[in-house]
Length: 144
Image 1 (cartoon, rainbow, N blue to C red):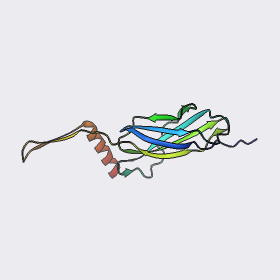
Image 2: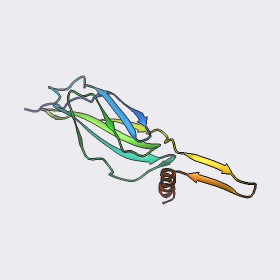
Image 3: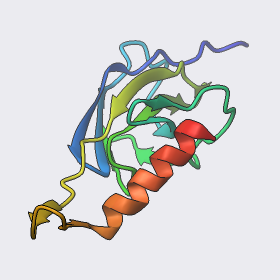
Image 4: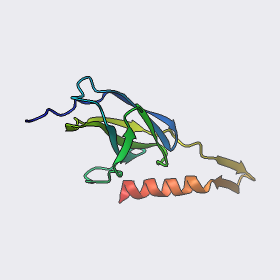
């Protein structure tokens, strides 16, 4: 006897909680074909700033299991002002359900940047180490 798969989770939404965190929320599928045993989620980086990461297969996170009583989860340790693809689906005794996909962007980091002019010929610019590393990474992705 063939059982139909679960329907897609509905109202999948992702919001940026901070520069390195996304909050993922959804509602139970309208047609779950049985009780939802667990929700499954994966995500991947699709771009940084204004630089898309095109033609890069893979890169998905490990498969994350989320208890069926939860309808949200937090993804952390992400890159600031970066674009992610997130997919969520339900699993029932009939198997994996249809995949719901959404795209989201983390918030811009609050990097410290101060410019102190000492004289007309000499100025001192200080950047946080995180800002320097982030800019180097963005430039590498854009021009590599």
